[in-house]
Amino acid sequence: MAAYLVRGKCPRGCGETLMLDQSGYVFCSFDKCPQPDAAYLLLEQAPKFLAFIRNDARLLSINPTIDQP
Image 1 (cartoon, rainbow, N blue to C red):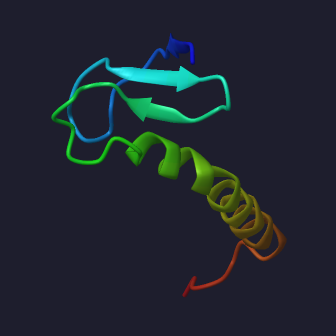
Image 2 (cartoon, rainbow, N blue to C red):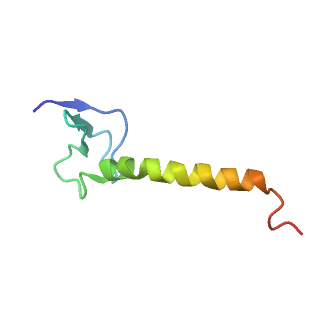
């Protein structure tokens, strides 16, 4: 199966070793990486994290005086 180099660094500190396979799986290609799927797991959680941030920002803009003396 072909894999493509991904611009970015492994979140576990291996350097610029990220690859993307044809199924969309991002992984670290360094053979001694302690967690080769770390980038994939972070990317998988990104939509939930961004939705949380958007929702939080929306709530703050509706009532910007919360916690003000």
